[in-house]
Length: 310
Length: 185
Image (cartoon, rainbow over all chains, first blue to last red; front, side, top):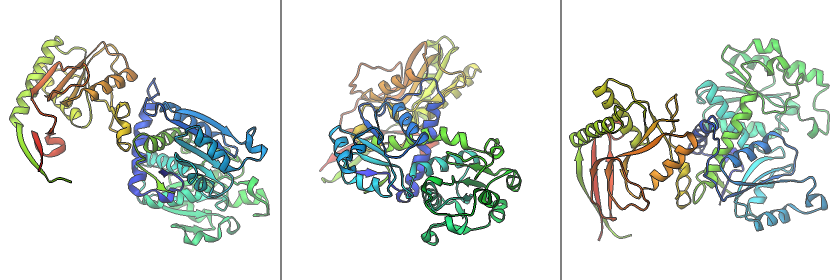
């Protein structure tokens, strides 16, 4: 059985197939009847062990638009709070006949373990600080729609790379698709292994901005920070926040992205977030169409058309 | 695997296809009283090409532009689970939509009728046409559903062991309809 656990396991052909399929799905979401009969009789379980608004709603909307049955499971108020293990939860889902399990979990690697316990497809909706492949796919889709291409595109990913599954998935996917990624962060917010990633690294945002076509701001993940990674929020914002002055240094066609939720005033100023060159709201809409594409390609046939084998 | 010998025979050549489409264009004009409220919708890939050619013919004969578009039926197929998920084709409706219009569906080969059934379902989700008609370049028989074509380029009696392949200039570099016999030896 095939799954979508890491953006790194998608080949260039797979990734382009997802983006092209999403392009057709986008046309469906523009019409008055937004529903397709394609996944009738399939069951998709949303298994969320961590808080999430947009990702869970996005997967739910995507599955429903394809006529799949959706079962939402959040750890709060479930048997997990009584101490049930991930494996036992998985076996319960298996018994209910889930064709796909969309999982968000605080522990890196949880989706990979789950893939060994269930027969259905596993879709990683964010595991710890590891990966969030559908976010990377929707980001690539949003970039391609705005900029018209991905090949040779210069993308700066700025901020809390250390705690960001979005950054890792984006670096892997964008590299596969031919874009050039530069990570910009204070040294304390970069993972130790970053030199093995297929990207450039810089500590100086002001030097990178004028050369970038896309600037992706990452959320400062205070909830995952158990130590002092920078002296103060104010100092972080002064050096790595995207405010009006820095925004003015971008070239005229460059766009600003953010995976959400934003800390307005911290990594991005309200003015920049609400500018017409910000794709933040588009990214949410594109999230549904990209996830429709992923679910279709995993469940729409006798066997999945994309993804890796766990 | 048994040895398979393919015998291909051209049943229609370029000029035959040209004449068949010209006749269908005239028939559409006749039957729909001048094609006033007609929309041509091709089923990708080759049906879409044929729909565009028919629109060109009608424009030549009557000097009017018939709205033309495409409707992809992949996500409405009844055999999705028999094969891995397929890539999607393009659905491109004319700007004024299909509500209240006479939609002429255009496909290259009419066989089981299952594609047409899927197309009727797909149409249902994008609007409410006044009537739906069907044009096909080749009708090879073996229907599995109560569906028939209104306009047929050529009726081609075939056996189940044969395959019909349509080549068109725009996608394949030449115009021809081949009847391919697969003989196991």
